Amino acid sequence: MPITRLALPLGDTERPVPVWTLRLAKALPFIVLPHCLWRLPFAVGFQMGTIDPNRPPMPWWAPVYVVGLSVLTEALCLLTTGLVAGWGEVFPRWIPFVGGRRVPPLAVVIPAVLGGLALVAMFDLYPLAWAGILPEVGYSNGWWMALSRVCISPAMLWGPIVLALAWAYYRRRRPAAQFAVTQRRDRPTPGGRVGRAGAGTGVLGPNG
Image (cartoon, rainbow, N blue to C red; front, top):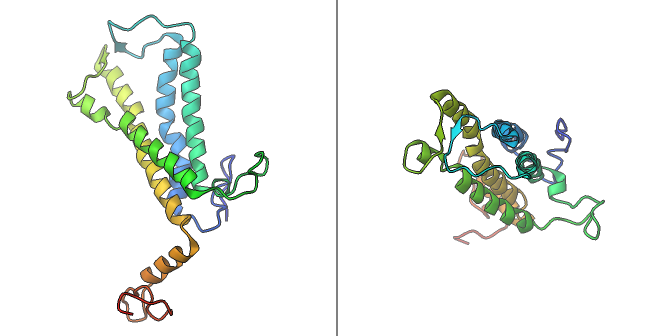
């Protein structure tokens, strides 16, 4: 049964979606939310305990940029739910020219993988800064530093989650024949062994 607790329907796909992918897709907006909220005070000039003598004055458009960045972050997390939803497999009918057509799998997988790798590069290097290997902004005291790390740390999961969802999407959208062969290969036989592709199915295996 499709999961519709979010505004976008999830799980209404042609092939069943693994439960773990549904849980990750639903959790992702909440995982990055602490980072978005931690960033917002910078929009009004509150520096959240950071110390940077070389920080330039805030331009007039900085509040719009900071708020927009947090909104964009959450929007991208919601867009990721397309990896576990029917609208990620078939274009919604309201989209001009392509509405109702099937979405090419690679048109989703390639941007998702590139985006996931970019997120890993952006967020998953923080531990190196915390260990002193990379430069890190200073803080007025340890409490501000602890708050910063508590809020930023969950965002390090963003990239790996997107990559995992992209991998699951690719496996689910594989051609039907390849999907069926894999299912037969992984299905246990009555003797408790895993069946080989082609065994008893009319499909030739490695030994004919």
